[in-house]
Length: 363
Image (cartoon, rainbow, N blue to C red; front, side):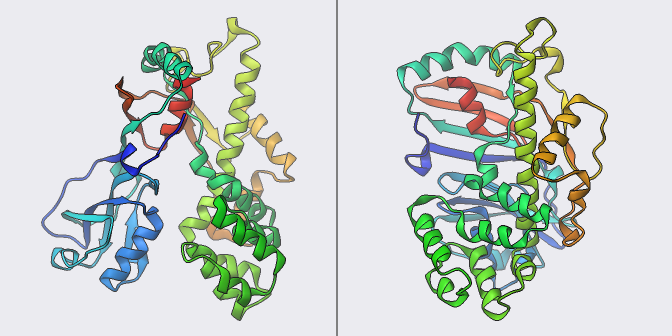
């Protein structure tokens, strides 16, 4: 299967809960973009408005190689200022104002329209599975986008361990793609020659550039260098590690129950889930986690394998990143799921991944 041969093959629109007002401290706009990461788009908008990027907020992170739309809020500007912005591959539509900043409560989910390039076998599987997934849903794993090729969860693990040397290496030298791999090799060969590495750092690597600029002036202050990354991004490292622990633990639960279908919470195919547990929540590990369930114990064992425990999520040396944990639906049920002429359309709740649904459909 191939996805995203062209941006228009993958279209994502946020489903949001927002009632526009005529006045307020925050301007609310719909950002539609192509070939922009959400973070880089926010930086571009802030520069165009000549304001700090901390005044421009978003709720959900959207793919780069797609056509996506999402809400953003901008503190302290007016519609007339927004109308002056012209950025390639980006459109900003004024929606209104708000007294409150955007929060997760404003994001209900996402609507997808995806062109699929399937093999004959994959298409047969999809047509066989679609009815059951409409009814029972699919296992709500975190998708690969959560982990950015594996670097974000590894960075999170090292931060939780207090190993800033390894965290820095992960942030600076663990990329995907030809450009990223070339830079990784150079940075490892020239490790600690921060000025030389900075000169070779691709312009698209904004976080890495911030880290390297700091290291040029403070060569041995690794925690300070990591703190030069915007706090929401650093939090993503911790959340990515929590997500990989959740994924691994869910896989172990599923594997165990598959051996005994009579007492199973799952059918033999893991993307078919019994209706009575379709809204079951499973905890995401954090410093407030308890030892109350089998799933908690599995997650804690996974932590211990990395020489961590639940107190590690307090992050005493970087407390602004502490994470108490939360919960996640074991199963996600898509709405308005339909497939016709290579086009797959559906809606997913906030935090569920289209790629995970597609994998469940074609497996």
